Structures are given as structure tokens and as C-alpha cells.
Image (tube, rainbow, N blue to C red; front, side, top):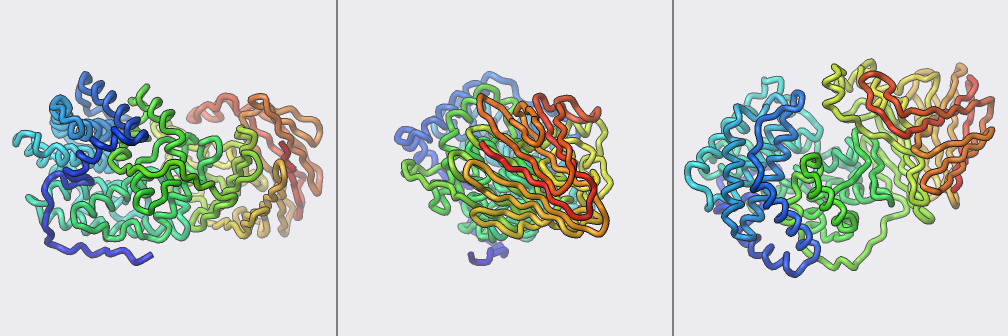
Length: 585
């Protein structure tokens, strides 16, 4: 790929409205497309019914969830973008008036919570889209109200880099993509009346984006996990698409090494069940990914939309049934229709049997036989949204996820309990005491029940068709040599854990599952949904197996995990050892 062009060439010939992501020609295209293309038709029918419901609902109010206004901002983005798109395709004045009422209510908020700037950025994108797409249908007073709000409640609060809450200006995580993406949208729609401010905001976005964009390299494995891939990537796509419409160039935002390839990552990290390998702060369920419609069209890769096409009816039904709890996933649903370009849906490209991603958090993703899926991760603890899960894995076969990762716990529940959740750069932190985040809830190898050390890399040193090796050497104090070796076999796999050090250590291996477990000596039988999986345990020394019900919260601030069982295998202390689990369907 060519190097991105980070220099904004100014002045430019500012396009007429609409100039943010869409042009007037897009509305005519969509009117035809929703008649001729099944995917477009299903999307538009769902959006139209949702628009009819919003017309009967009151505008949003400034209701905080803990310290955040984020859920309101996401509702705003879903409502305003959807109403504006449907209004332009149908030319129905009701949707224009309802969007205008929503935007006036949002503009009247005392602020958009700049202390948690994600809220501000998402609100800015919502009002920018509505203002731009409906520009010629809004009265002058409404336009002026929105212009003032975008400048005073979004752009100006971002300009002072000395304010503690503007820490994201120096960050290298998803906040960079979201905050600059939302502010760039505001700058673009105000570009003719506020040319110098627009130039400053857009150039700053191009200057600061590389810190996070380079973390996709080399293969697209996003360091913060699949769910935050969805969040950060969506806003980086918004920034690329918005700049291209406004300046005639995306400035290479999509050409950072690994960025386009990350669409392959998200396809392969999605298991046959349709659920993610949900490591780090990630829920297992995958939903509609609007940004993939842009990426697939950009790189002529309709296969990247296979999971979205297969689950489209399900996802849209879920969204329509209860949109109030789905804003994490469906706030950009209108953009999926805008970015969709019909292709030959019959062309199927099967997923690879092995997909490997390097970078700060390497993963290896295996598929074999009839529905076998094994996801393995390495990396480091202490980066944004990380868990103590080095060497962890999930496993599916026969339509069942037999080894699970619990993913994230709702942040608000932990913050309300006073948990110091974001002190993730310190070895001793309450973050690592949270059951779903710390070492106790992951399918990992441990020594003497210790926590994994921060800032120690656990690389995937071997990833071939039949073998994957994660090097855990130095992840634990006093254990200079430790390896997890996964060997793919017909009908299952073999997991070998090996370690060596100067002093004896007690090793333990965990396997978490929602299956029922019956133990008979060194064999365990897991049953779920009428299916069975066998685990045969062996070791170089004496070992003991315990099976524990983990349904109840471990600590007062932990979430419950109904139906969760933890298998734990503990080996007698030894300076050298091996523990093996043979897995067979």
C-alpha cells in the first residue's frame, strides 16, 4: 500500500450540501436500489418502519448513565441519520420535521458531556449528518441553532489540549478514531462559514490518526478485540468517506497497513456459530457491521459481507424489536444502506482453514472438519481493554461452543460499585480483581495462582495448519520457559502445556464451559444441546481435577454467570512439567 497523504491541501472548493458522506445523487440511487436489490429493500423497509415509530416518540433528553451521556448520543445518531435518510428517499416531510425537532432538542442540552468526549463526538456526528442531509429542508433558524451547537458544544471544547478530559488527543486507541471522526464531520458541514476552524480540525485528525491506525499492522488483528474493532473502525471509515466526499481524497486513511485487511480479521474471528472469539472487552454476539459495506465496496470484496448477509434478517429483527437496548450495534444502521452497493451475492468465498494475525495482540484462528473452530490469542496485558488472558482460547464443534470466554462486564455496573476499572497500566489494580477481566475466568495456564505480568509479550511462535504454539515464557515470575501447544487432530485437538524453571511451581489449567460436566477419573464428558465432548487429561506428575459451578458472582461487584462451569486441573509443584488435554468430539 502507498503511504497515506497526511497533508490537507487548502483551500478547497467546498461542495454544496449534502457534502457529508452523501451527495444528492445518492438519494436517487437508493430509490432505485431499494426496488431492485433484496438486501437494500430489507434494510430500507426496516428503517422506514423505525422512522414511523420515531415520529410518535418524544425527543431525547439529557439522561446520564453514570458519568456518561453515551447511550443518548448513540440514540441521537441512530434517530437523526435514519430519519434524514428516509426523508430524502421518500421525500416525506414528516421525517424532516421530526429530525429537526430532535436536533433542536439535542442542541439545547447544556453540553454534550465533554468530560467523556466520546459522547460529544458521537453527538457531533449525529447533528452533522442531520444538518447536512436535510440542509435545504431546514429553516434558517434551525440551521443556525445546529451550527452554534456544533461549534460551541463540540469543536471549541476540543481545542484546549491542556484540559485533562482531552487526553484522547495524545492517545493511541479507539478514542482517537471516534473523537476525530465525529469532530471532522462537524468541521465539514461548517466548512464554508468556518473555513479556518474546519482546516484546523481536519488537519489535526490526519496528524493524530496514525497513532491508532498503525496498530492494525501487519495483518489487521485489532489490538482491542473484535467489538472495539467495530467501534474504532466504523469511525475511521466515516473519516475516510467524509474526507473523500469533501476534498476529493480519502487522504489514504484506508491505506494504513492492515486496515483493509482487518475486514478479513473480523470475518475469521467470527466462528461458525456466528459469535466472536470474544477476547478482551468484547461481548460474544456479532451484529450488523455498517462499515463493512464501505470496506467491501472499496476493495471489491463482497465476501466480507457474508456474515452480515447471512444474519441480516435476524439482526434487523432484533434491532426493530427493541432498539432501545441495541444502540451499541445499530447506531450506524442507516449508513449500511447508504454504503451498500449490490453485487453478485451468489459468489461465495470460503473462510480460510487458518488465519493468523500478528501485531500487539496476535491471534490464530482455525477451522477444520465439520464445524470445528479454535481461536487462540497471545499478546500483552496492560493495553487498552485487555484482560489477563494470554494463551487463552475458545473452541466450537458440532454447533456448540465448548470452551467459552465471558468477555466484558457492563462498565457502568463496575463504575457504580466504585471499581477502579481503567487503571489498566498497573500490575496491582482493581481491574484485575474483576472476575471476567482477571485471570480466574479465562482458559489459561497459570503458575502458583499468580497473575500474568503486564507488558510482557506472549508471541505466537508457530502457526501452521496442524500446530499453534504460544510462548508464555516470562509472563509469570520464576517460570522462564512456558509454552502452550495446540495440535489439530481429526475430531478435536490436543493441548500440551509445558514449563521449566529453577524452582518448583504448581501449574493449573482452566477450561470454562456452559456444558454440563461429568468426571470419571482422568476423563471428563461435557454435554450440551444433545451433543457430547470428551476431555482426557494426562500429566508428567500428579494432578487433580475440580469442577465448580461459577453461576453466582464471585465478588459483590461481579456479574452473575448463569450456567457457567469451571474445570480446573492442578498439577503438583515441579520445576519441569507437562500437562495435556486430549479433546475429542
